[in-house]
Image (cartoon, rainbow, N blue to C red; front, side, top):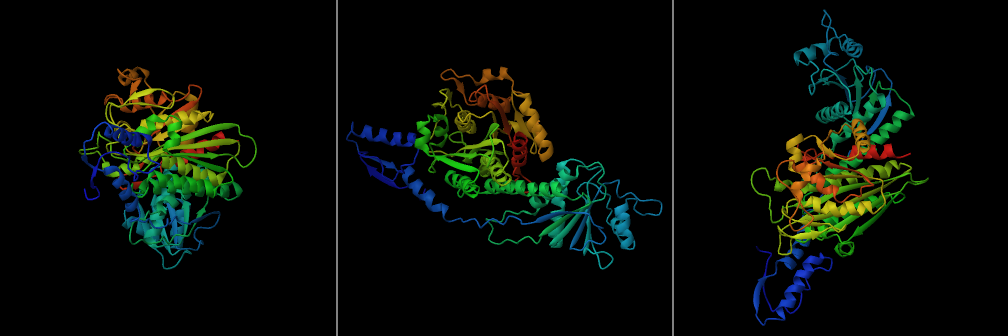
Amino acid sequence: MAYLAAVSSTFTTTSLLYPSSCCFSSRLFLRTLALRSTQSPLRLSFTSAVPFRNLMARASLGLTHPANTQTPKVSFTAKETDVAEWKGDLLAVAVTEKDVARDGDSRFQNPILSALDFKLGGLLAEASSEEDFTGKLGQSTVLRIAAGLGSKRVALLGLGASASGPATFKSLGEAVAAAAKSAQAAHVAVVLASSQGLSAINTASAIATGTVLGTFEDNRYKSESKKTALKSVDIIGLGTGPDLEKKLKYAGDVSSGILLGRELVNSPANVLTPGVLAEEASKIASTYSDVFTAKILDAEQCKELKMGSYLAVAAASANPPQFIHLCYKPPSGPVNVKLALVGKGLTFDSGGYNIKTGPGCMIELMKFDMGGSAAVFGAAKALGQIKPLGVEVHFIVAACENMISGTGMRPGDVVTASNGKTIEVNNTDAEGRLTLADALVYACNQGVDKIIDLATLTGACIIALGPTIAGVFTPSDDLAKEVFDASEVSGEKLWRLPIEESYWESMKSGVADMVNTGGRQGGAITAALFLKQFVDEKVQWMHIDLAGPVWNEKQRCATGFGVSTLVEWVLRNAS
């Protein structure tokens, strides 16, 4: 390759080009070469790949500059007003299939639709008939109004046979954003044709969250981008008051965390290196310095903590590992519970010597292998704004790349984790669990009561649950209930899978305490069993495998999955 140079050397000294922050195994490799040179006068010609790759890696990072983020700044207000009199660019009416039912005279039976249609002289009923609008989920029709209403346009948005739950109303918010974008509307109102039996606070919050997420487009790496026109959304008919306004602010805080998660996962690996991920974490700590502190450990510090499992994964990369620890402490009052959120932070995963090849390997998408850390830092950003009391939260990420070089771990290597357990590496592409092993030990050493780790860990979980559902593993029924209750509010789909202890037989090694991967059968379960070996039995622990829902293949972008469930779970543990 062009960036490699052949250099003649007698191996009398180690290379000064090799950075002092490189991992200890790489320097040991070079010192070994120097030692061997004193035993032989041979002059050898070798390719000095590591130093030159380091220089090239740093240089190439400067060639791609992401533009500043354009996070949507949309205000939300809860109102009680006559929808026919509301003035703005677009009135969005959410309807079920039952809402659009007509009487014998082809008039709407729903009072809101009937009133709007009366003001428009029957135009709404006529347009919905011509468009064959029946209220099916995902259906929409937009009508431009010349006169009769305060709004310039009316949109009918289908909710399906019935409407309930946060996922439905998040989708409604996304549909509102799409309609507003199509109409270039700045001021929008949303009303439900039927709102009986719904939680007004949770419904309004879900609509607001969905609207912000639907408005967002990650254009940082495009040479041209358009700014969104949407500025304000009035949510009509779900009540008013301080509780609702507080919930709408909460929706904004959580949405900002989800968008951070999306941007982190979307960022290419030549931009989002472990060092840059550490910088992003440090920004959270500095922005919310009243509640956050940050500690970033380099390879030497990780070596002192005996993190041999994590450092083995990082050994091949030109970009040094960064072990990231953010700590949230409440602005006042006592701490009643200590939590840890641990995220897998592989900013790129080549697979190592077991390189990802063949159809479906998705190596070009392996920037998303830090989706667990994105969820963790997104939750941190949201909690920095909400500032819950009574709870201490540790956000822990062992960030690195899994690459290939002469200093990298090999199939068959034995590595030692920081709790003293030894691991035979029978597959270098099962690297995430190796980094999580030391991260989980570190989390337990913080004296926490509960741990949730999140990771894009196995393709087996995608095969089992598909692209939109995350797999949950925990020995604790109490912790499972807490997290599933939180997901009911967030609308994120989780499914509990068993931790089948008998499967551990496939993870036993002849030369070490364990191997790092078992057979193809039950791969998500054996991965969870592996992680369990590094968690203190006194600590409640959960593993969430989000390999499927971290990425939206249809839209070719990240989802920010996990942020809202984590935030809701932390708040439920707070006083």
